[in-house]
Image (cartoon, rainbow, N blue to C red; front, side):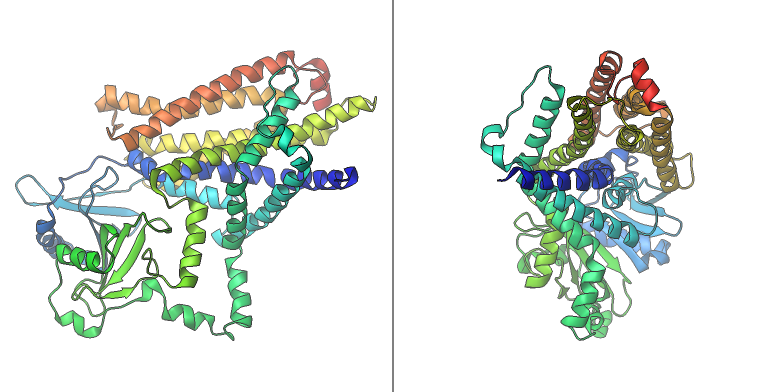
Length: 531
C-alpha cells in the first residue's frame, strides 16, 4: 500500500478519534458499568421488608393488597423470584417515584411498606447512551449517533493503517524505555482484538440513535405514510384482552405459568405485571428470559389474565416476526443481553478496553506531535491546543470515573435522608465531572492528573468501604447483601481502586521525572508552556 494513502487514512483515523474520543470514553466506561446493572441494582437495594410467598398463596396476597390499596389495580407486579432489589413479592409504583411493596408477615397478615429506591443503575445506563450530553434523550442519542459515525470511520481507517504491519505486529506489546511505542502497541492490540465488538457497537449505535429519521424515510418510501398505523396495530403496550374476558374468573399465577410453558417451553418467567386488573381489556405481562435467543433485556409476552391467550409476542424470544426479531437482535447485540454471564463479563471487559482505546488514542496524538517537532529540529514548546486537549482528556475521563463511583456510593449514603435520590445522583455525578474538567483546564494536565487520579481512587474505594462499614457497624444504616451478585460490585470496585492508585503513583513519577517538553511534565519548561 502506498505511503501517501496510509498517511491519508492515518490522518482520518487521528481526527475522527480525537473528535469522538472523549464522548466515547464516557459511553464505553458507563457501558461497562451498565453490564453490571443487575448486581449493582441489588447492591444498592434496601433489605427486603417481608418474606417470600409460596406460589399458591399469591392470589390471597393479591386480593388482600388490592382490597387495602385499590389504586394498585392500575398496574402492579407479582415477583416470582426473590432477590435483593425485590422488597416484597408484590410491588406497585405510586406518584413521585414512591414504590410500595406488599408481602405477608410471619403471622400471615398483610405487611406493606413504601420507599424511594435508588435508580443509580438506570442513571448510569442513560450516561452510556448519551455520554452525559444535556438535553432530551432523543437529541442526546442523535448526537451520539453522529459520534458513532465518526467512531466507525476511525475503526475502518485505523484498520487500514495497521494492515501493512498487521501480521508482524499482531499482539506485539514491546515493554521498555520507549513509552510511546508501548502505548501504541497496547492501543493497537486493544483495537485489533476487540474489532468485531467495536464494529457491532458502532453500527448498532448509529442505527439506534438515528431510528427516528430511519423510520421517517421508511414511512415515505415503504409504508406510503401509513407507518404510524402499522406500528399502532402491533403496539406491544396497546394490546388489550377481549371485552368478554372481564366476566370470566382470573387464572392464578400457577395456571398462567402452565399456559406459558405450553406455548413457550424455554421461557423462564420472573415476574407477572398486571394492568387494569378486573377491568375490561385487562392484561398481564409475563417478563422473563430464554437463554436460547437474543433478547432486549427481559423478554415479555402479553396475555389475557382470564384465558391465558397470548395477545402480543413481539418481545417473546423466538416468537417475533423476522423484522421484529432483527430489531430485537440489534438491541441485544449492542447491550449484551444474551448468552448469560459469559457474554455479560466479556462485554464488561471489552467496554473497559474500549475506554482505554480512546484515552490512549489522545495520548498517542499528543506524544506524536512532540516527536515530530523534535525530528524537525523545531522548538519543542507545544501549542496551547495540545495542552488544552491533554487537560480535557484528563478532566473528562477521570471526571467520568470519579462521578460514576461517587454517585454509586450515594445510593447508600443518602438513602432515607433525601426526598429525591435521582436528583442527587445527577447532581453528584455532574459536580465531580464538571469540577474535574474545570480543575484540569485551570491546572493543566500534568498537575491535575495526579490529583484527579487520587480523587477517582478515593471515590471508587468508597464503594467497598461503605459495605465494610455496614458489615461491621449495622447502626450506620448502610446495609450489606451477602449474595455473590451484590458482593461482586465491592470486589470489582476494590480492584479498580487499586488500579487507579497504581496509576496515580506512576503518573506522579512521570510528572516529576518525565521529559520537560511533554504536556505530562511538571518541569519549569512544561509549566511555562501551559501558561
